[in-house]
Length: 136
Image 1 (cartoon, rainbow, N blue to C red):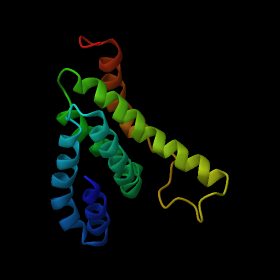
Image 2 (image 1 turned 135 degrees about the vertical axis):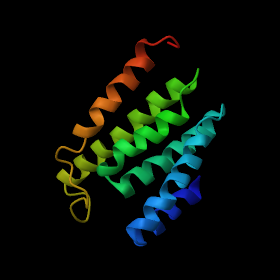
Image 3 (image 1 turned 45 degrees about the vertical axis):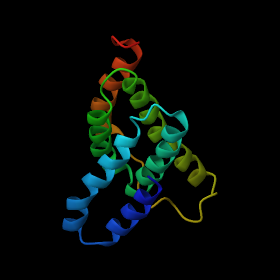
């Protein structure tokens, strides 16, 4: 999974068509590792996924949610999904706070205004299932 962040950074430098063609396979391979029952593997993978999310920016969040949700849909994976979504949202909040406090060298390259509006309709049912669903 650690190589995936480097792959995404390279893809961001390539033409948009190539990025759109190759990005799904990179993200899917990272999300498949989250299925592991080993907590340490999931934590490392989640950290890589957080880095990828920050690299891509909030505009990619709906797509990321879709890929992650399709990978983690059964049994314990539903809870892994909820925790992973929380981690992704938290990384944007931390980034926004650091930028407000001037700890980032420059303003974030991705605007945060309205960043989660499109994702909210996808997030709420997933988190509701995690908390109140059959698996819980």
